[in-house]
Image 1 (spheres, rainbow, N blue to C red):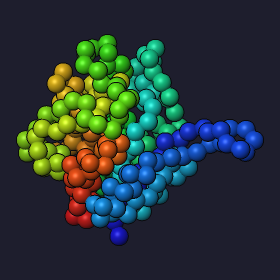
Image 2 (tube, rainbow, N blue to C red):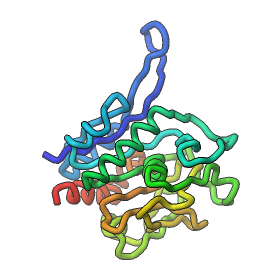
Image 3 (cartoon, helix red, strand yellow):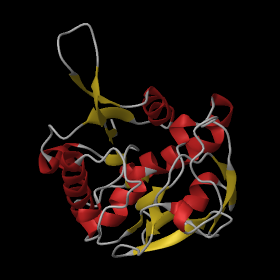
Image 4 (cartoon, rainbow, N blue to C red):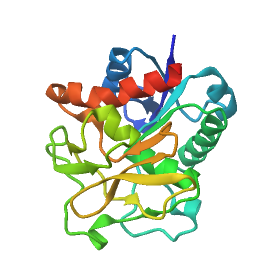
Length: 235
């Protein structure tokens, strides 16, 4: 059994219960894609101890969500910053450190690529409209390709997808800026924004798009990234 942990998004919901109801959620299709790739998905939020969790799993997926607190990389907050969750930031950054220390394969998805970069000492572009005319946040439709991504030939991510040109969705307003320790850019959108990163061994990867949100007809293309993650865990 190959256990692949996916971090959850913390939300406060209104229900029939009195008062606000705290929830931790993961898109169901993360589990579907991991299972199709041969792994067993488990979900975790900041209630878990990062070291104990990393000791029990075989691979890690960092979920999407709101913005990373810029205090984590020594910057002042941009006025367009939204949905910051400092507790989640601290949990996921610590979990990345524990996972890398154990040589676990890691895949960061959208916010996850930002967490991964910040955990390794990198910084972020806090609001892409300040530096690019390409629209990167497309909420409707969010499940269809929005622009192409050019992948570096020979990179682990290009091998996982089996191509160097990929059509992706785009639901973000931040991006990788200064790269974290040991990370290299391996994917770019048409305006030059970094859309994919990985380490030299290809075991630590980040992608800017949301494979789990792509419509089912795109599953086969997106499945390669999860197959590669599960294979890396087994090796």
